[in-house]
Image (cartoon, rainbow, N blue to C red):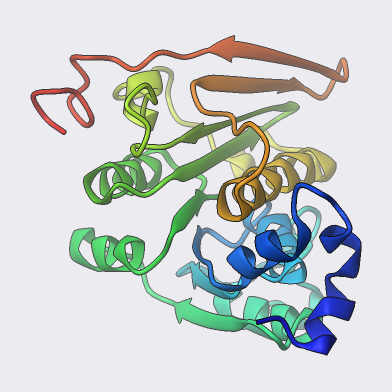
Length: 251
C-alpha cells in the first residue's frame, strides 16, 4: 500500500490515468540498476528517485572531477574527489528518503554484473564506452531483463529500448555489432550538457513506462537527436536472427 505521505508526494503523477495508484504501487515495488552516474546517469537517477522507484541500484567506479560538473548535474563542487556513487547517495537520499539505494562502487566484472542485473527488474545503461554497453547488453539478454540504452556525444544523441521478453525485440548487439568507428569519449570530442540531460530524461521516461506498465516503449525503434538543428528522427530496428548475443543459435 501507499502511505499518506507517498500519496501526497506522488500526487501529480498519480493523477495521470496511465499511472494512477496501481502504477505508483508498481513503481514502489520495482528495482532498477543504473550503470554509470555521469551525464546520462544523473538525470536518470534523479528522476527515477523522485518518481518513487522503490529500489535504485547505483553502479560507478569513478570519482567526481571538476570537468564533470558542466553536465553531470547529480554532483556539485563539494563532490569533487568523492566517489560518484557516494555523491549520488547523498543527493538521492535528500530528494526522496522513501526509497532504498544500493551501491556498486567497483567496476563490475562478468559475475558481479550478472548478479547486479539479476537483482533488478530493469537496467539503464548510462555508461560511456562500448565494452561496458556490450557487457550490460549480454547480461540483460541472458537474464531476460529490459535494457534502456542512451548515448550522447558532441551535439548528437540516441536512445532505444531492448526488451528480451519480447520475441520481436532486437538487442544492442543487433544494432551496433562489434562497433564501427573508433570510440570517442566526451573528454576527446566534447558534449553539451543539456543534450545528455535530454537523453537521460528520455531514458528515465522509458524506464517509468516499462516499470509502471503504460505507453509504448522504444522497442525496435532508435531515436536519433540532432541538438544542433533541434530535430528528432526515428529509425526502425529489427532483430538479427544471426546475432551472436540474442540470435536463435546463441540466445
